[in-house]
Image (cartoon, rainbow, N blue to C red; front, side, top):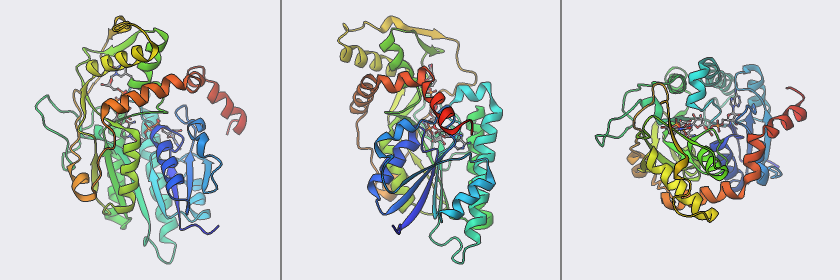
Length: 357
Ligand code: NAD
Ligand code: DAU
């Protein structure tokens, strides 16, 4: 089949990437969607079971740091759009192992940019009809006080964790490729996502799983840190809209104006899981366990996404209460998915399938 365009989505086997791949595969049958993923501990092809047989979907196991292989893939499939999500994404891991974050998030992004530059500049039409869209985070802006201020697109970068420092650096490289070589780039900075298929090291799936099993809920510090939560499908919808209609070289913030203090959010999770499991009210509250705070723990994130609302008309489709209900139900109904991760079974399967590649 002759496809209208070919998109390469990196990190498509991860949490947000799998929702973006699913949306694109289903919504654009005339696009070829290539999911390029290394399948690190965070990559899981079970996240894409429902679309893996779609005729317009292709999975390629590669490392974004392998610049020559990436160049071959871009050339071979005549990729004209890149949506770049592949990254190391967990702050706690970045504190333990900063080098891996610098390698994947900084050098991996640079290798993808340079491969795209070489392939696209070699074509007669050069950058015409091309797009390099980099998915970033609100954490690059640093932290806010409890004064009601919000992160806007013009806030200065002030990252505090090795994770956010590596994402900030990758954002700068993407913008540099626009300013230096004229590559049509876009960057978006989104707040905390939640929903199905999130790796259970992150707050919401970890706590749902622990409540289900009656295990302690490790709350960092006093639980007073604030995060701005967005349902992952709404992030994927924003990515689709911005990829197609966003202005080149622009930055858009994405967020749901939905701030929650960690401890309040945890109490909502406890109440929801207890209700759905038929436990008496307050049954799992004693699982709350205050532990040593995360080093360099940012106090508050809050995104101002007015630009995206005004320019492109994007609105979140779900209220937080509906999103939490859907999410908790999904994890309770997909215990097998969680178990295959917590037991490590999914990684063994890939090792056998790809024989150590
Ligand atoms: P994730 O950790 O769930 O998934 C990351 C994916 O990238 C995995 O499938 C992994 O296998 C893949 N990957 C890692 N290193 C790779 C490499 N070297 N080559 C190829 N693939 C590789 O991450 P996520 O939470 O879905 O986040 C996706 C992107 O969105 C990241 O860039 C992250 O910084 C950004 N982001 C995340 C959030 C959030 O709340 N989760 C919010 C804003 C922005
Ligand atoms: O803001 C966007 C970012 O959101 C993304 O860029 C990151 O990839 C993503 O991981 C997320 O980062 P956070 O550090 O905010 O998410 P996490 O789920 O790890 O933690 C949410 C909050 O909960 C944070 O204040 C730390 C706290 N926490 C987390 C864990 C895992 C706990 O109190 N206990 C825990 O066990």
